[in-house]
Image (cartoon, rainbow, N blue to C red; front, top):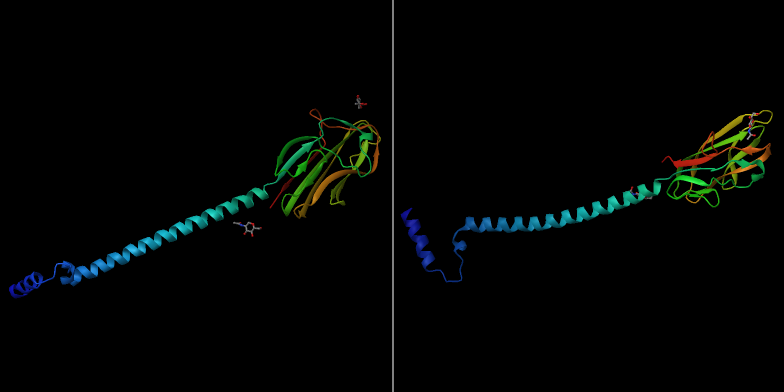
Length: 206
Ligand SMILES: *[C@@H]1O[C@H](CO)[C@@H](O)[C@H](O)[C@H]1NC(C)=O
Ligand SMILES: *[C@@H]1O[C@H](CO)[C@@H](O)[C@H](O)[C@H]1NC(C)=O
């Protein structure tokens, strides 16, 4: 032991100034190499975490914009009663009071809903004929009849209400609207904020 220590001190005494102390202690050298390796590993891991964070953010943004594009719901109704002459064959019915229009699919100027994204949608119409009035209402998709309703108070003074509930698959840009069919008569369709309402609404299911 004494001999070994003396030898180590002797060797140290003969070392050139630029030689590191560590060169005489292999264990320290190995530890330093390990530390350097760990430092490199930390640097690599930090870079990887940064990449994953960025990727996660991109994924979130994409998911969010996809989700926003699929959020579609609207509700519109006629703010006043409409005389039966206001309706005519194939004329688009304008529901002028819009209470909800998420996704901006419904155009109050034309009465047309345009699908902001492709998917499965549900549409509803409610039509109220008043006092000996009647009218057929067709729900159209790109000009084709998708559903029909016939509120009919033809021979009596009362309200007759008819509804449509229509589940369809739409492609982005498809157009949905209501028109009067080939039957109408009597005095008026009732709507507004009192006893009954004619409305057009819809939403994207998924
Ligand atoms: C977003 O929508 C596109 C097109 O439908 C789809 O390819 C993509 O996987 C969606 N992204 C996410 C994160 O859901
Ligand atoms: C509807 O008919 C009822 C019963 O005849 C009548 O009392 C009412 O005034 C009528 N409404 C209109 C707007 O004509």
